Amino acid sequence: MNALNSTAILLFANSSRQELVCKSIVRSEKLFDILTQVTLGKARRTGLPVFHFTEKEQIGSNFGERFTNAMTAIYDIGFHNIIVIGNDTPQLTTQHLTYTAKQLAIGKPVIGGSIDGGFYLLGLQRVNFDSNDLKNLPWQRFGLFNQISLSLKKKSLEVVLLPVLQDLDTEKDLKSILSFSYSLSTTLLLLILSILRNIEHLYYTLHNYIDSYATRCYFNKGSPANSFIPIPLYPTVG
Image 1 (cartoon, rainbow, N blue to C red):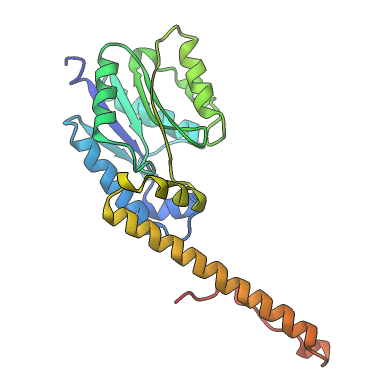
Image 2: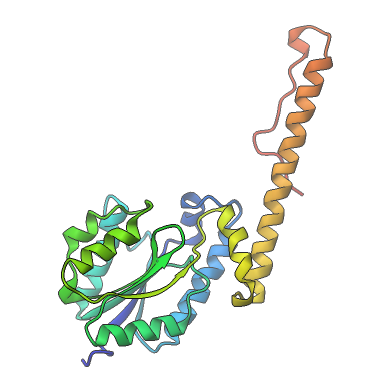
């Protein structure tokens, strides 16, 4: 294998059903289905081998272990370089991936930082892979990007940094990504707008139930037994 042929892309992303459990975005299963397919398409257009590890393939008791074990599995196949990405950064491009592969080929690790302090891309050579270091990083917490950058620089490595991009973990992130709507496909943009409208409708409906309950309790002059008005836990959204 030459340097480029020994590079693989690892999409480390759960199924959309599992993402519903992990992400703070309601009714987002279709969104993450599309994000996964779009990300896989971008990765495949590089011409590099692409592997997708969902929760079914991941092994470990915590995020750090699962992430590290997934990388180990790809290295063990025989690849010397791995580009790890998620499915929640719609601004990621095929060009980012191709550029990363070229930097890895000349011995430079690559990190793409997220606005929330994490990272959306990690390009790493096997020779610089330290499973213990990776497992002990502050995964899924603010400061992850700084910690992994520091860890690599301690090895006297020249780390290449990609542009900082917005990832999608919360409803606030969906609103933020609209500022970069020019970089989103029409399908993805319309889906994000639909989710945000549904969220606003849900909050508006719940607010009305609470207002109605408070008003009726205030004006109710009957017995306590007759003053209780049940509020649906999950109000139906039309």
